[in-house]
Length: 124
Image (cartoon, rainbow, N blue to C red; front, top):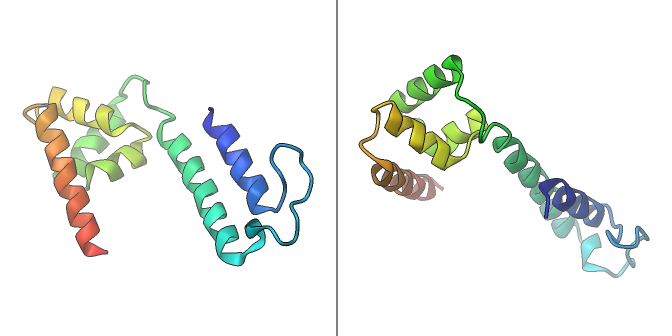
C-alpha cells in the first residue's frame, strides 16, 4: 500500500469520514473521541514525514549531502535524525558512512543506532 493512500485513509478517519464509502461516520463512533482524533492526526503527520524521509532514498549522494552527513555524524547526531534530515533511509546513511570510512562496517553502524535509540528512550 502506498504511503499516500495510508495518509488519505487516516486523514478521512480523523475527519469522521468512512474512507471506503466517503460517508460520515456515526456520531457514536470511537473516531469522534477527541483523543482518537488527535492520535489519528499525529499518525497522518508521521506517515507524511516517513514518506518525505524516503524521498531521496535511492538518489545519488551529492557533495553537499555527503559533507552534511559527515558533519552531523561528527557532531554525534543520531543516525535516525541524520537520515530524516537528509531524506535517506538509515541503511543508506550507514552504508555511506562505511564508504566514507567513518564506520568500520554496517554492523558497527547498526550497533551504534541501537545504542542511540536506547539513549533516546532513556531521556524520555
